[in-house]
Length: 213
Image 1 (cartoon, rainbow, N blue to C red):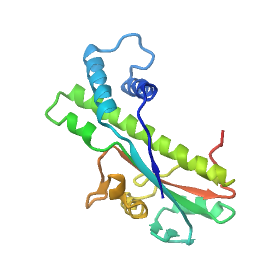
Image 2: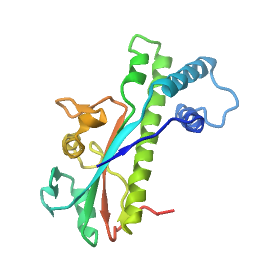
Image 3: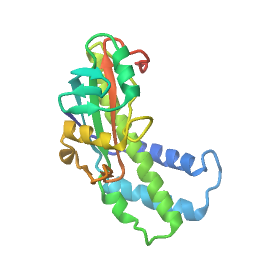
Image 4: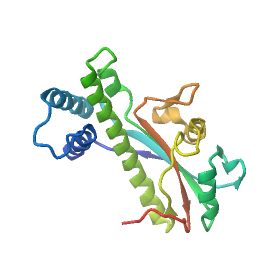
């Protein structure tokens, strides 16, 4: 199992600012609502001070595929779409399990009693940041897989397409989620909420591989 270790840089926070403005609908505009801008500046300052990105990935071989899904030593991925993808791979397919999180400190800074505009900005900063951290982790494991001369698919998360949210359980088991700083509720919701989990297929040949640049 390999862990994500990243220090936050001014460039990273600048990228986060741009992504947040785009998501809020201010991308490319010369002026931003002063209330939104003030909340954004505060959220970015808090993020730079308290967020310590954490994450991990693990690559495990596929034991079998069938009507139940993709079987691994830690559990079964019950998605017909992902199963078809793995079955179309050539050359000893494996699954990469990933989980990344921001931690809880950013969420604690803006509670439900705050103005809606501030909640919106802090929530958007957190969501965009979590995706950026997931992308960092993805870059790490992709570099590892590239070094092995293998191909990989796009990442695939529980709760999307035909993979039910309870698929979080197999990812959590594969990575010992609490060591990453994530726990699951009884309904398989991740805490902290600003976390991203996913799987991807790895093999000598993947039917729709992600380009390696």
